Image 1 (tube, one colour):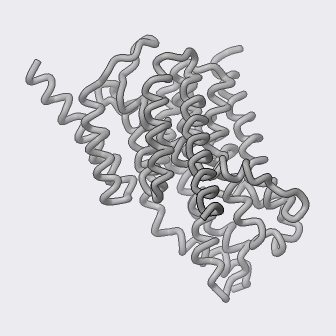
Image 2 (spheres, each protein chain N blue to C red; image 1 turned 120 degrees about the horizontal axis):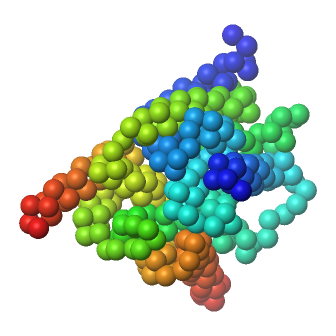
Length: 234
Length: 112
């Protein structure tokens, strides 16, 4: 077996344990496309081209709620701003190894491929990291496409009384909780929560949502600045 | 613009924007620095964005643009928060939250 194939397989194996976790997420994302009134082409186009679950779900449900296109796209892009952080953090490790693939590697950057590459893959001596990273993404991305398709097929048959739209905040909640590690994260979250509770019903076209996100981010950044200043002063 | 065309526009713009966000730092590594204030702000995206996406759907139901408090959702979401915190598992959180919502709705139908 060539080193390239071996590296991709090891990458895929290292993320295989996460697969059960993304199945319900993919199903919900697909079902959201169906409940917004669209079909297979849109679900597949979105999961292949955007390839970032949280933003797909956010964009689809906001679109279905009649938010303005600027808010739909703006909110989804803010959700994906974390990809920029991952990319910045991964670059020193992977860019020097990437060669001709370098301009294209970004598309394979998802939460799990980032985490696996930075925590497990980097410490493996038997793989080349670029193919390890691509392999981890291919494993999850193929499950992602399949579950999105299944979700859109099943979604059109689910009755409204089941209140399946509640699955959307639940998925985000499950993603949120592990990110709340420090005091400043919890404060950021509380500010965003309060702002969203007040502003979302108040402001038109779902503009309350990006406003709440920006307020939370600003709070987090300001608090961090304070703490940093204090450390310098001491 | 038809609904379908508008949705495809969202897909294409979102795909392009996301590709740039993901690709530029890896692509341009070593050529352009990221300002510190931007890094500091971006660090708080996950907590702020995910919270804002959780809260409205956990507090309110929305019919024809009007928001109404939904006690069943609030209680179910609080339960799901507890489950998410203890298990750190999306599938379990999803199932527990949906079951809690259905139980609350059934209980409230009984009371009413």
